[in-house]
View (cartoon, rainbow, N blue to C red):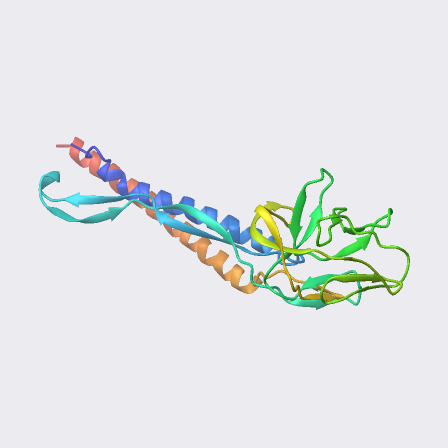
Length: 251
């Protein structure tokens, strides 16, 4: 018999192929991190893996005592967003806001009225006098309502209080919760977002991406090499299997 019911001869190929699939997923995450190395407030992603299945090997053709266990390759367990703060980059623009803490995010409302969250504090006053992001989402206050900015010199205090012409006109909302990425450098929160009681906001600065480009490049090179080695292993195992089949057929 060329292979047992579990595909014994092909088990090595299956395990290696699973490793290649996992490496490819990891490479995608690293590549996305690198693509956002210059995105304000971007938080890098990490991925985690588990063994897909662990089988017990038995002696005497499956009838004897256990000889040990054999894994058949990794599978994606899940991912996580790393909320380490990025470096603060001074801009001198009072409407550029950075959260000087790993906790919390600004609340914004998109064109469909959905509440989202972001660490990108590159804000502006739109044509209707409302505080908005550069893409047009409306920035919300600590009560999740829109913020109107009347004409005048704008100042933002470290607690998020906005003054225009010396008069307080609102407070930028900073909220926390279980954030999940939804694309566009935005997050949603599972359940009700909780306001941060004492936010640390720095006006005139933006938070940079927390991606380490050198570290991510090194990781991408390492993963590419690992993928290439796994591919060679699959090819070699396939060649050995073909040789074994030909040898048995020649008997």
